[in-house]
Figure 1 (cartoon, rainbow, N blue to C red):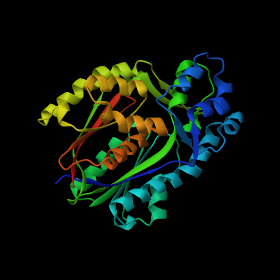
Figure 2 (cartoon, rainbow, N blue to C red):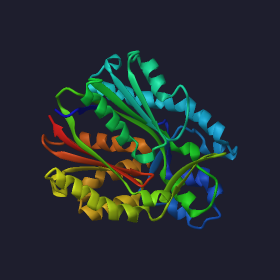
Figure 3 (tube, one colour):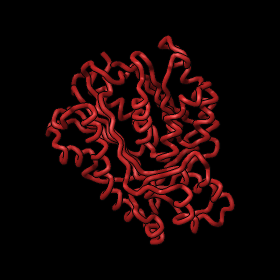
Figure 4 (cartoon, rainbow, N blue to C red):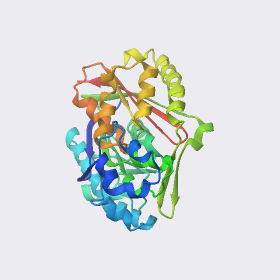
Length: 348
């Protein structure tokens, strides 16, 4: 039997901002020199975003350095991660002490002891728990986290595992009116998500397969650098076109190896790196609007939460009530450019 996703949990910070108000009340002074900025923030694909910052305008007015930003991360990230993990455990009906493996992912802060150890200690996980902390991988990191958990379950190292993804992207908004910076600032948000996995059979999403591919000659199109004022992201305007051209052949080839075609997959959870990425992949795969609705809804209501986003989308897919035997494909993309996928099958 394939390991199954037995529970999903998500968590958002308490501070929710309408996209237009966030720009007008907090960020406009930093971008007013770019005549495109207002239009970029007004894109209908994103309506709301959440942040651990109660007053972004006041925080950024102080011109915080990397240390100040990371201090907020260290104070806020473990609690948000705990909310998501507790929700996933409750959904699965698991006790934290019964877990054999915990995998955490993040790319928006650094702390030691890390989120993994803080989760294990505060939730009462076993002292012999195997912990894996993945950092710096970006929007696709949920998949390496999933792969690490699957390896642990399939090897017999653990019978139950949790993958936790926590990102506080809004801490790293950067001052600068160049269009690339405006675009990235208009997309990213804070959130945490988690899944609980079980090696034993039962209801939920069975993980049939995962797949990775990296386009090594396009690495410069998506970067994430530590600077004196926190992390600086660069997202090339060419990324949607690169992914549109590359993902289609990669995905159809992978499905064909398993005797499947795009039409055999009923549910799609595509990481919404931005509205243009969803538009391009919807056209490339010939997907119906309803099949992209979970991805677009999460983007609209929450923004791009980096590695945490894909499990929010999986939660929405699950809430929609898949039928036994139906399949789902999850996809995410990040620096590399790296393409990650998971093929799931629903069992009641």
